[in-house]
Image (cartoon, rainbow, N blue to C red; front, side, top):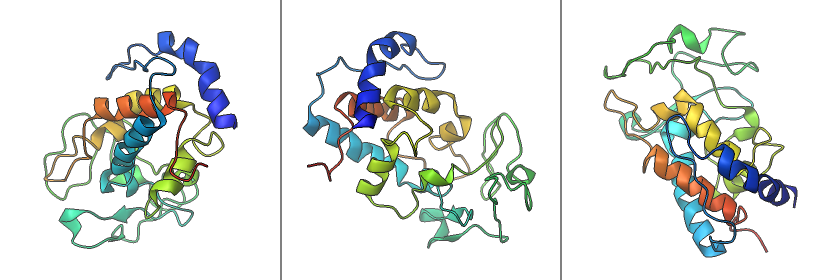
Length: 204
């Protein structure tokens, strides 16, 4: 399958090229060292992150409406104030996400204030819809280069290293529940899953 071949073809180069990221270490396990069982265990942990509100609330579908969910919201519901990020996924057609989620360095310590990071706030691409999706659905999406930005597992790890909105998920401030594990542990799981051959529970 193309997602598997692409990952293997890139592995020998990327182990050197991505050995040290700016914010995390990107050191894939040796080829053949991660069993399918261990790869599926890594995927289980990855799914706990991707399905967590800090991640899935902005990984929404073609309606372009971010969600509010998680312990602090009581029940899941669409983002307040009739927010719609539009086909641009940044709100260019209506009110830009950055109107409230402004470009700013520093922490997000004020409860109920709009989170802000040092990059432009936006929804994930519609192909990466995670909110309400099952473990198998997200697994198949994330390993599919047609739906993951054309990335192999090491490029997914590199994306995690550089995207500051993703980093916010582990340090959200304001009394918000962070994503599980740590950014480094999440990157390590992505690398292990990739080396195992990107296994999903629905594989034959």
